[in-house]
Amino acid sequence: GHTVNQIQSGQVIVDLCSVVKELVENSLDAGATSIEVRFKNNGLDFIEVQDNGSGIVGDNYETIALKHYTSKLSSYDDLSSLQTFGFRGEALSSLCALSKFHVTTARADEAPKGTRLDFELSGKLKTTQVVASQKGTTVAVEDLFMSLPVRRRELEKNIKREYGKVLAILQAYACISTQARISVSNVVAKAKKAVVFATKPNQTTRENIATVFGTKALPALIAMNLSFELQLTTPRRPASISENKQVRVLGHVSRPIFGEGRQAPDRQMFFVNSRPCGLPQVAKIFNEVYKSYTVSQSPFIFANILLDSNAYDVNVSPDKRTILLHDQTSLLESIRVSLTALFEKQDQ
Ligand code: ADP
Ligand code: MG
Image (cartoon, rainbow, N blue to C red; front, side, top):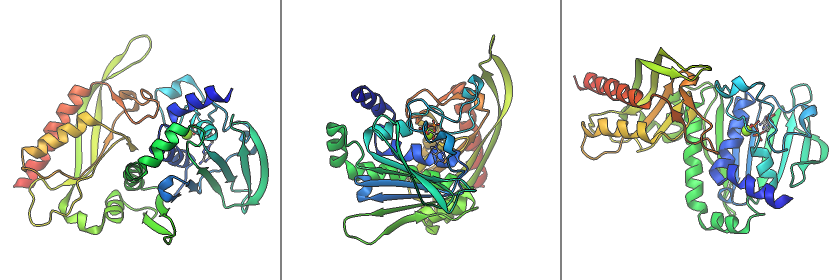
């Protein structure tokens, strides 16, 4: 019954961050070039993600919110060389069970008409209704965790901190997304609509950083373009093979030697093939190298590791926030060496 569904759903949508992450990833998967994220009361009352992506085909209305439905996996091999963010088909079904949830969508040939989809808790399609809509998809989530009172109370208690974490994730998406503009707004109590930030389309990552964190941050940053070869083990059936592969680490980091302008915020963002993720081991290396140049300042780090998609696993944790890198030791060592070389060059 619903209880089972709710407990399982709780594992994919564990908090406010996972809601926002899943919805933004769906929008990116749909090829959106504009994504608007709107909160009411820090997300406690309302979360909406609107995109101008492909929209959803009518044939899929019945299935999108069913558990384990995904339109993104065509074969087993897709799992090991993943091009899209989503692949488990659990986000929408979870949100159905955990909130008041609806979707509005229009394909290019349907706009300015679209369809509003409402679902049962189980994910079964309840009603469809023709509404005005631009091309794209809007997912609205009201009263998150309303069906899980304990978790709802937790969310209410920690909403400030949760919202802070959500903003950090959205900042990371906004900075890395050069193909899409991302805007974030939050309406709190009776205050006027507050735009938190809004990037523009086709900005460089450096311009995105300036938009999100302020232009003051830029003089304190240097561009990073590390490049090295690594022997990477690729799991293949019947036997895994080792190949030399090019790895690049692109981004922007605090100047190792601080002069006057210490304006860069102490934010650290890591990405693997442009997917935001927590990489504690990589973060540790960066911070260690910094420590050998400066005493106390915590550096700004925006680092996108570009490597063969066979070199890591994304589906280790249910919320995909952790990535398992094969050959981690040699990758870390190469980062240490080439980052040190970059800083030595700055020093001259
Ligand atoms: P997954 O992303 O793993 O496929 P989800 O539950 O996140 O599973 O989404 C289910 C399906 O709904 C997707 O496979 C896709 O077909 C459709 N969908 C969800 N969000 C969007 C969107 N923003 N634009 C277009 N299609 C979407
Ligand atoms: Mg998804």
